[in-house]
Length: 215
Image 1 (cartoon, one colour):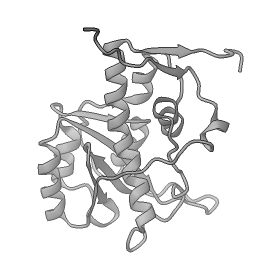
Image 2 (image 1 turned 30 degrees about the vertical axis):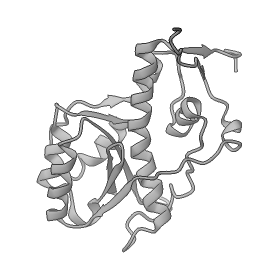
Image 3 (image 1 turned 45 degrees about the vertical axis):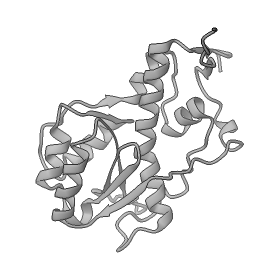
Image 4 (image 1 turned 60 degrees about the vertical axis):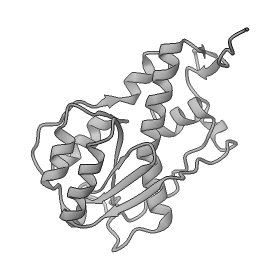
């Protein structure tokens, strides 16, 4: 009996940004939990520390006034396969439990442009960061040069991550449903990308379309 072969995945070295608008929109079907107290943060971190792979991202209220510096990080998103916690740092700060999570070296922790996020978190409180996997570098190992989460996700999964809420007010008294979903997807997408990139690296079931390298 012939074994069933996994379909070869064709990936672009660089995904055409113009094509993203034509793709179906990503949806997140998991659970989203907004954390607004230190006690809630402690319970959330206990749950997250029991997981094997987590995606991380942050959001900051944009500053539109000339001469005004960048605002502090307002939101830290941490997601497993099916649950994303939104830690409202503008209300609870960087708690001891969150520092414990960020400093951990036992869980696979994944982010994109994470060094930038980490620098902003260190403005809130000094800590020694644990090991994180940088998706940009991880994708480069198989020949993908896409730097943005939107382009990388479109390349690997053929779906569009909406960026419509990126410049919204992340320090508002309550986050809208659209903000919550946007924030959750950005962290959850890191988990999904890491697992799929790991799968195709190990299986070899992919080819890179280099296109016109002069573009």
